[in-house]
Each structure stands twice: as C-alpha cells, then as structure tokens.
Length: 186
Image 1: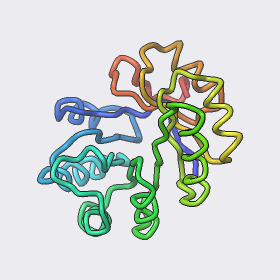
Image 2: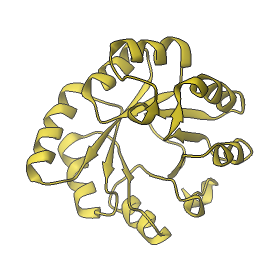
Image 3: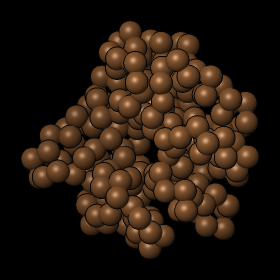
Image 4: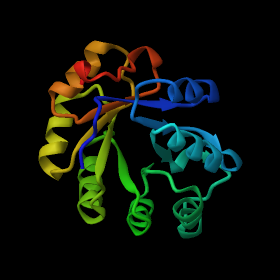
C-alpha cells in the first residue's frame, strides 16, 4: 500500500475538516471527535472523495475494545484507523481497514518492545512520533520493513522535508500551514 501525498492533514476542529473537504487532499485524519459525530464526519469526508482515517484512541465516548472496533468497522466504516494499541490494529484487519500503528520514540527499550509488537500485528503503516528525528525514522523503517509516517512536533517545512528525505512515506501534521497536496510537492 502506498500513500498518494506526502503530507497528511490531521484535524482537531470541524472548521478544519470542512475546509479540507474543498481542498485537493486525498486524505483526512480525524484526530479528535465525539462518538456521536464520527460516522457522519466519515461519510461526509468519503462523499467528498477523501480517504478518512480515524485516530481510535482519541475519540471521546469510544472504548477501543473488540466491541468498539466492531462499531468502527461495521457502522462508521472509515478507510483506516490509527492507534497505539496492538489489538486495535488486529481488529482493523478483520474489518478490512487500513491500519496505522503509532510508535512513540521514548527510549531504546520502548522501541525494541514496539518493534516486536509491530512485527506481530503487521500494520499497513507505522507512525513514528516525534517525527523530527530523521535518523530514527530511517532506523525504524529498516527494522520493520513497513512504510513509516512521521508525526508529532513537526513545525516547519524544513522538518517535513527532512522526515521525507530520511525515508518517511508521509508526514502527518495538524499544522494547516504545512498541508500541501499537489503532486509537485509530494
């Protein structure tokens, strides 16, 4: 699986979401929402021709257990999910959703532990946070052999470019000034 753009917009506010519906982005990441709005937002995004990913861990009112994932997979039907939890990634596969496992680069032990989990769950993508560590992006990608998305603490276009140059397939960011969608910038 490949991504068709290098910067993935991650939204926290409805106004940002609405603006993206009219943009040239192929993707929208819903970072924060309420369970009651989730299905409607996903359907609106998909109707506008966007692939919508839901950060399951950040949805208010959703418990990310098997039943929560059943609701996501059967009722909400996003194009993909993002989570730090291995069981969410496994459930995503059951519902044929693209899976993105988040990996926090805290220390060497955490990285080793998470690499083992990633090898077992085999997500479609791994999101490495913070995304401002180009050397670690390259190392993680080499260890797991799964496309890497860089996210977290990216504040400038220079940092976007560094993450991409280090091997990230894309960068996720909530900073709208960094969102770029045309193919010339990918």
